[in-house]
Length: 329
Image 1 (spheres, rainbow, N blue to C red):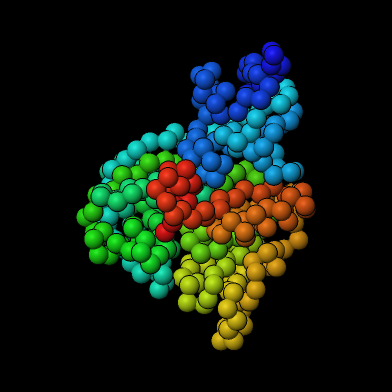
Image 2 (image 1 turned 120 degrees about the horizontal axis):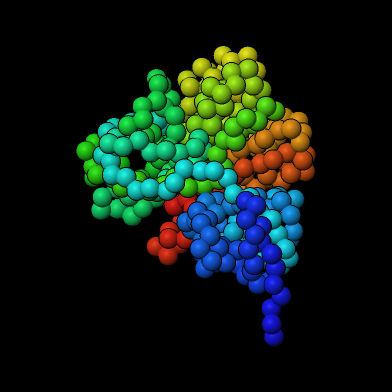
């Protein structure tokens, strides 16, 4: 049976496709450049905006950002890609490893050539002799940024092949291969409405990068930053957040799961309970545990707000590590 022909309009260029084609496979077979990485609908590297038509799969109801690796063409469609830095591979060396919290290490990597990335994107790091892992480069918690230094926040996991080696077998001077950038949960510039950032755990790293860039772009913008951790000692970002809170329209909301009474300003509960009123003019960015990012996205879409998310999806097997955006820490 002959399959129906559909028209695909990509950035004002017109193409033909068969109904049922997977959008990413169609693009690659037809010489259309679409960034991609995990092919599992997790990393966000292949996300494009659907502006007209319908696809099957690859997105949540009401979300116009679709994963090309999961979406099948079922009608004439129009899609738009966003201008992002080219993906490259660089070599570097571990410059420093510090303890940010009992379970979180700050790793600084020195590179000879600066890596071009957008605030909120992530990279793949492969420490020599270890499997690759995905982490977000972030702005330093103290001082100014340096184009030749990349900063990462890495959660230590018992028996983790990479994280448990930090500070021991992986020490300053260790060689590292950096690939990227990847991901679509990056700061959209020239947006003049409110911004809401929601981070849990080391999801703080990409959200901190976005917060700094957003305030540098518009110092008077309205920005709410919700930072969640399981317990008080894991809130490693307090000094940096105190500096950010000096800006006039910035609201910082720290949240912990485990109740505590020593610091009344730190709230207890779920980060979704702390979301401010959202409107179609609000842009929400979130990174952290999948349940949290999914709930934030659902609430944002219900309010008509645009939401960009990078969930942390843990990995337990080598085959999963090749497919999933966030490897186990």
